[in-house]
Image 1 (tube, one colour):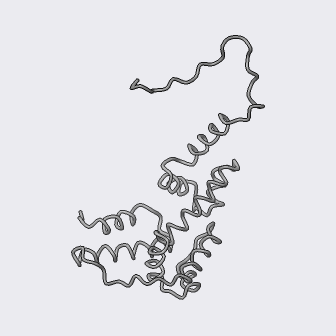
Image 2: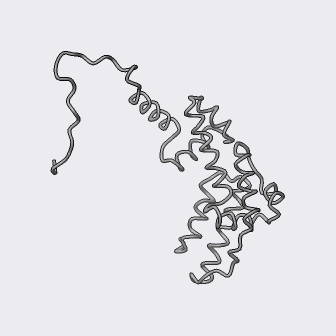
Image 3: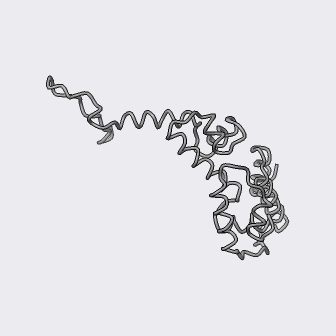
Amino acid sequence: MSTNALLSRAIDAAFRAPLESLAVDSLIVDLAHGLMAGERGGARSGISRRVDVRAIERARQFLDAEKTRVVHSRELESITGLTRYDLSRQFRIMCGTSPYRYLLMRRLEFARERIHRERPLVEVAFDAGFADQAHFTRAFRSAFGLTPARYRALRTRQRSSAAPASDLPAKSSVGPGPRPPRTWAHGR
């Protein structure tokens, strides 16, 4: 059990997720930062905070364009001219997350768009670049707090309750109509 929060999170991540190339690089950087923070006893890091903005922007654009497939670190190294570890560190400084997490969130955004189009979930998982539906479900639940199936059900219910007036039955002229919802004003 470590009292170093950075190191604990990195170790937890190592056993939680399937590790693609970018995830491994991110994990190594996180482990290194955690170990160095433990060695320094919490003192400020001597690591450069310099960021090659153009290189990181090229990496971000590449990840946006290639979101539905596994992207390897060597591809990003080639595009940016940075080592995978410098890229991971600088990407985190500029974007607030690792290249792998950025790519994962782009995949999940793509998947949500497909869910909105009512595509089968197994097809959504495959099209978004996940290894299988189980991997997709774990990533989706981790990011959004509910499974893709539950998300779809909630969206469907939300859409059906917001149907246009022309789709709703005509209002009856008999009786006062439905009661307004009870509010909890005045401490009730």
